[in-house]
Every structure is written in structure tokens, then in C-alpha cells.
Image 1 (tube, rainbow, N blue to C red):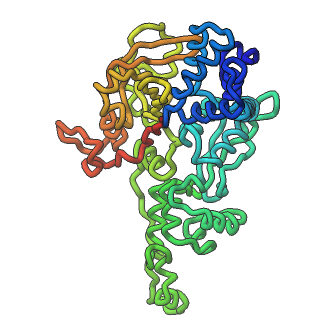
Image 2 (image 1 turned 30 degrees about the vertical axis):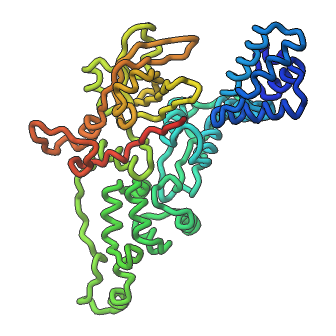
Image 3 (image 1 turned 120 degrees about the vertical axis):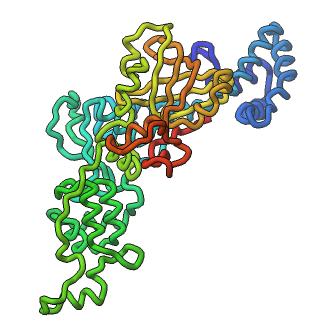
Amino acid sequence: MLRKTLGVPLFQEQAMKIAIVGAGFSPSEADSLRRAMAAFRRTGEIGNFRDRFIAGMTGNGYPADFAEACFRQIEGFSEYGFPESHSASFALLAYASSWLKCHYPDVFACAILNAQPMGFYSTSTLVRDFREHGGEVRPVDVNHSAWDHRLEPAAERRAHTPEGGGRFALRLGLRAVDGFGEAVARRLVALRERGFDSVRDVYFRTRLPVHALAHLARADAFRSIGLDRRAALWAVQSLGGAQGGRTAVEDLPLFAAAADTDDDSVRVPFQDEAEVTLPAMPLGEHVVEDYRTLRLSLKAHPVSFLRDRLAARRVVAAASLAERPANRPVRVAGLVLVRQRPGTASGVIFMTLEDETGIANVIVWPRVFEEWRRAVLSARLVVVDGMLQKEQGVIHVVARRFEDASAELFDALAEPDRPRSPGFRPDPRNPRQHPRDVRVLPKGRNFH
């Protein structure tokens, strides 16, 4: 019965067979046992079968201690077991996904991003992983993006695979822009023809609401016409706006009539707007705005702005953990991507941190969690002191101490020339105290 799984019951059908063959259960009794296993965590009814199971096995000549051990295995199996058909289906999906990611990473990345929201990792993490494996990612752009993420021929060859994958760059789609709807995006794509050459051109050819163009400007989607987000937003605002930000001023009846007259003394507001020179937006501000509008940034990773400060505190980059000796103290830092607290882990929390070089896995024992609960649950950027463990290529940091470094991160992302009082330290719980909103950077996902 257990030959295919090397003596370990993995599937519900195996547990049912053990009950039928070993303990003399009828098929209906075995099915009741299966239902009790499936509901073990909710009802605990599996214990009701203990006496019947052990009596049945001993009655069939099995030693009592062996019968006890078999039932304990079935009880333990209840924590993780599921039907063999589910196992096969899940294994097929996992294998096919892994095969695609290995041989056609560009296709895989594009497909899984178009399937969001789903799964374990955020869009920003999936994009970072694709780039780390040699993939090219191109930004959202008013002249090049469709609604969905899509593939474009890439000049870079280092990501090519023998099977023919990796030959395409990933162009982020308009679906990535927060607040930009699908119907509006499809109208934009349908009417752009050979492309737009200005914000005004986009507006008057598509007649999209002014506020929709503002979403594109904030997402830095006008680079192909020579405008960064600040210049693009200025151009959008120069259109004016009325009726809740949907219509440009010169489209209103009064100004439309003025535009049709031959009288040179009549001037339509904003039509002859003088060019202005806007101050350059600092890279840190660009990154924050990218996260605010796209939930990711291709320009830089937020933690990179703290690397010098972190290095001075002996914080090591995630990518360097593989080179460091095991069973030694180590200090790591990163954005909190995921917190897992599986029911089978006896209260242990598994955290995934991300810096500009990769990810680090952190194990938090219940006692440590209770001591540092606030930082574990609420920090966007956390510094962890712990012990480095390595086992068969798997690297973990067993945490001993936590520090919430979110405020320090947002200070580093602010403009370098912004004045600071001598004792200034921003409070991430009070966004109005700081020029950035702490909530724009990813909040760790929690899984139980």
C-alpha cells in the first residue's frame, strides 16, 4: 500500500487502505475516517476512530504498539495529507511552471504578471527575479504599452536559452498603472496609430479624461515623448480641467468659441503657456512615486539608498549570505515581502526579506516573536540579527533580534537637499511628518 511513497502515507487514499486492510474498516467507515482527517484542524473528530482502529488491527494479529504507531501516523498525516489526484495535479502545475521559467523565462514572467493578483510573490518581486536572471524589463509607456504586459524583441542576448527562450524583453502594460482603467487603456491603444508626440496630442486624439492622463503622468509613462513624470504632470495640468478633472479648459463651450474666432485679442487660457524649467526630481523621489503608482520601480531598489549606512552597521547583502560561513552570527536587512505561519510549524514564523541583491529567509521562533512582535508584524524595512544556517543549499537566518528601520529608509529616500532639524527622525506612523507616505512601499503579505 505504501510502496510508491517509500513507507510514508502521503495520500488520503493510502490512509483509507490502511484502515480497510489493517483494521478491517468497511469502505464507508474508511470514508468517514477520510472526512475526519480532512476536518482535523477544525473539529478534531479523528480521535473518535482511535479505539475502533487499534482494536481492528490487534484483532487482525498486529501488535498493539504497531497499531498505536499506525494511528499516530494517520493523525499526523491529517495535518498535511490530501488526495493523490490533487497531488498529481499540483505536481504537474509545479513542473510545467518550473520548466517554463527555466527554458522560456520571458514567456513565464509575462504570463504570470498578467495573471496577477495571485500567488505568493508581488509584482515587484517577480520583475526583480526576471531581471536578475538576465531578462530585460521596459517601463510603462504611452506609445508602447498595451493593457496587458507583453513581449518585445530584445537586443540583449545574455538571457537567451538553448530552447529559444529569453529572446524577448518584457514591456510593462497599462494594467500596472494604479487607477488607470482597462476601457480607457484600450481606447488609448486603439487611437495612437504611429504614436503621440505630446500630452496635448494624446488628449485631443483620444479625448481621454484629464485625470486619466494625470495617472499616466504620475506613472512616468511619457518618457518616449521626452517628458519625465514631473514635466508630464505639468503638461497635463496645463490643460486645465473641469467637470471633476475630465475635460480640458479649452474644450469648454466658452473657450471653444474663443478659439474659433479670428480676433487676435481673444486668448484661450493655457494655449500659449510659456515653457518653464522644472527642477530635476531626485532618484529617491522617483522610486517612491514608482511604488505609489506602479507598486514597483525599475530605476532602483529602495534598500540601495541605505546600503552605505547599512554597511557601516555590518549589515550584509542577501546575495553575500551564500559566501559566509554557517553557524555564525549575521545581520541582514530588507523589505518584508512575506510572513508565513503554517499551522504545522508550532507557531514558527517564516519571513522573506528583499534587498537590492536578492532575498533572505528568516526563521522566527515563537519566543523571539513575542519579544519583537511589533517589528515583526508592522515593519516595512527590518534589520535582523541572527544565526546563519545552511542545509543542502538552503540558507536561513534564525532571528534573535529585530529593528524596525522603516523611518530610516524614508529619510534616505527624501531629497538630499531637504532641510532637516538637528534631531529630526521621521515617524512612519505619521505620514504628514515626512514628505513620503510610508504606505507606498510594499507591505508584507501574511500567510497562515
